[in-house]
Amino acid sequence: MTSRFPLVVALLVLTLASLARAQPVPPSLAATSWLLLDVTSTQTLGAVNPDERRDPASLTKLMTAYLVFGALRQKTIVPSQMVPVSERAWRAEGSRMFIQPRKPVSVDELIRGMVVQSGNDASIALAEAAAGAEEAFVQLMNREAARIGMKNTKFSNATGLSDPQHYSTAQDLYLLAGTLIRDFPKEYAQYYSQREFRYNDITQANRNRLLWLDPSVDGVKTGHTEAAGYCLIASSNRSGRRLLSVLLGSASEAARAQESQKLLNWGFQFFDSVRLHPGNQPVKAIEVWKGSSGEVKTGFQADVIVTVPKGEADKLKAELLTQQPLLAPVSQGQRVGTLRVTLDGKPLGEYPVVALETVGVAGIFGRAWDTLRLWLK
View 1 (cartoon, rainbow, N blue to C red):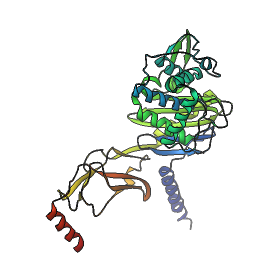
View 2: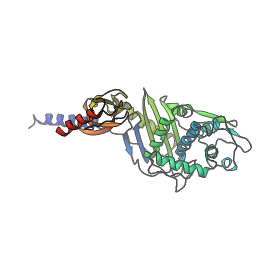
View 3: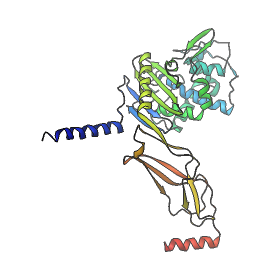
């Protein structure tokens, strides 16, 4: 018995080590709700209470910015446009960029005041410039939230001031931040990494401390109210791989930065991103029936990237499931199959396989011949 005992212990230790390697344990964080995602693969690496409704505080301003960037793209407003300061914007509660009545301010300055200084006055002025009134702008905010899939979010203002009818979740706020970075990369790079902004002879620093502590961090937004606690959405891009953390309900400004840094470091240290297939490159030729060609080249519209625990990439398996029989006509971009990916036998994700070219319909004799072949088959 004594000779077997060390072997049993060794096997047990190896098994536990393997499990620990396959499932990295997230750090213990001083926050009510948090979420960490790999933006490159859109996979969640860890989460606690991601769907719990919370006061989003100034994280709300990400939606305000998203709509403003959209208005800029549509040219309904322009960066150099001078915006009059209303009484309502001037008297805004909370954090401010200190705009003044009878002193118009440019859209570009207002965006910097909203993003860098988290100015509630700037947010209201932008809402009024884009939609005529904050109430009308809020309707656009809620419509856009529904469109991008924020299922547990409702906005009642453009600033993030606390209100019972103003709430969101870590999951929804990730969707918002990720969508803003994806849809407006130029505007994101222009505004969200700015460390300080000076307006009206007042210089204010960006409250996102990670912009000073971690050179890979290029945004995103802080928030704080008594109800929300201290919140931070942080984005880090290291060697082309972007992680996005959402941290809600921490105890202090220092704590939200420290806990967010801890979370980002964990994600980079314990996970790898693996590119399975490049986008717009043929993966397999699939048989086409009744078509002008007997096959169609298939692949993916974008790179297929998955995130796995470090050292586990060799356990990835991919299975290509195609639509059969595939009948012409086939349009370029049409979904014709699915790539099913597993890690160590467990489902990891499914990715649409599309036609990379168009295949027209065969002539009458070709169609008749394939009809007969299908019938015999």
